[in-house]
Length: 358
Ligand code: GLY
Ligand code: MN
Image (cartoon, rainbow, N blue to C red; front, side, top):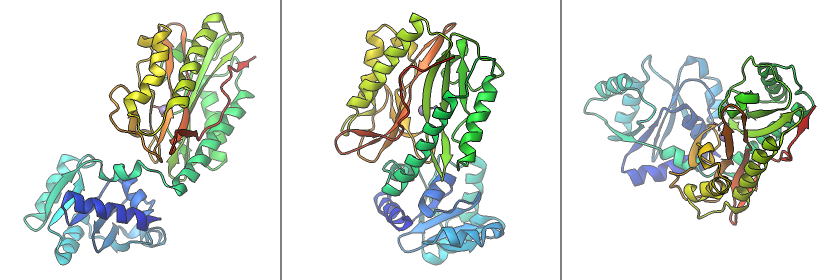
């Protein structure tokens, strides 16, 4: 698995015109090497692939990073990078400029001096991560199934009188007890007027009657995230509840029906946005229709007004239009999909009829 990823990175080295790549971003490190420890850097040239880590990981690292020579680094790992680079004739070294802070960069530069030139790059491994392979999709399907199962469970759990935090705790316990490492972000349980908050993380609010409860949550499982939103009504829905729900559902289904390879993120976004706008709620849908999803909860590509990336098979994204009416409430419906050769395929499968919980 990691041999293909290392090969992908080596092609990038050639394109960028550097001798080696220094991976310091922890997510990218795991992607390229399979090492899950909390500390370590990768140094990859056309010939060599090293994982530098510390004493704590000298048993774990060789077991996980089977395509890497594992080196226990000096107290300052950059000293070991310099030693390896000089001995291997590495002169130009790419580094991930979006992960490093200025003081670290200054220290690296002073250690490497004139021996090794640091070349700043952005998004190189993230570009490889855009295209999920079958092993990644299998994990993501499991992560999505965990989210689907959690929603099913919550349909029997949610009732008036519970605090949002109690609902979130139950969701997180359910996911953790079935294999999730954690939730993939702070669980959103937003009820009543709070459901108009697009990111209303669970609060002390007590769920009342005749109101929306919006659940947005996901499982972080085996290194990958799922992300699911469903909105239910507790008690009796009014016509307004039904109207907003139906518009969001229409928009979400239209996007799911239309998203296909060759389309830009902006075009995908418009599939949902145009419907919400047509019904007069365009200004109540103030976020993008979706985002890339994988090892991180938010990654490329974006399905938004500014989304320039062209969608291609293997990309995994969310589809999550919403309408938010301050003082009343809001609805979002979100699924995860993978772009296929001809369209897209759902990774999540929770039902989307309006659930009315008594
Ligand atoms: N579901 C959380 C988010 O997309 O930001
Ligand atoms: Mn999302």
